[in-house]
Image (cartoon, rainbow, N blue to C red; front, side, top):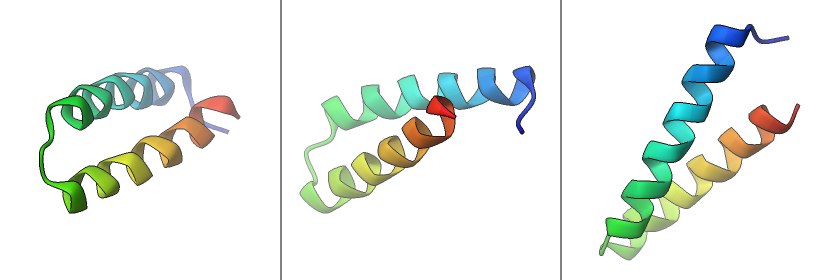
Length: 46
């Protein structure tokens, strides 16, 4: 189980990745960011 401090870090990173995803023009990089967003979503949900 992750701590509250870790959860805050994951949530902040999640929003940073969303921002980067929206700005990104490189499709390969955008796909990588998308995968990272999905991964963090799974962590945050549990």
